[in-house]
Image 1 (cartoon, rainbow, N blue to C red):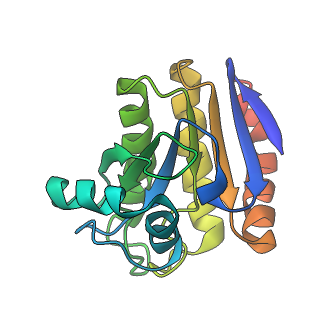
Image 2 (tube, rainbow, N blue to C red):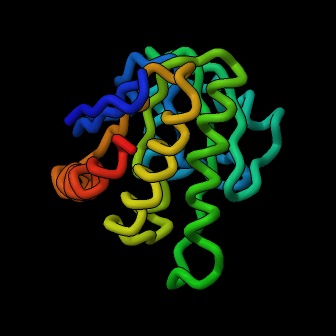
Length: 181
């Protein structure tokens, strides 16, 4: 599914984030930038040791923030590592931290002149964020950013499963009327 926001394209696809040819892909990292399972492990495996070397030099990344490395062996030139929150029921600031992870990633892309970016569904794997709630926060945050920042030509959500794709698609369809205002 694809929609136009201002002059930018927001796209939903089901697939593998490590295969994206965008300027940057976003990694669902941990705060120590140590690699791990899920998206994080897949990006480090596909991108090779250069990404981990750069992560070690950076040292860490607080929840809600983002840092950048090269893409190593990936098609994407850069990897933006961001740390989403662990879900603890929703009353510990998780929504704002999740929105901040998306915003920080987009701001870093803008600062570096990266016009195309691919996101996974942050915090919905091992960190336990409910998919429907996470999709609302992710899509609203990215759409709001695109309205104000035409320098981002394409923001793509690369969703690993059909269930995740359907959740994001349902949320995007529900907010479409608000996007034109």
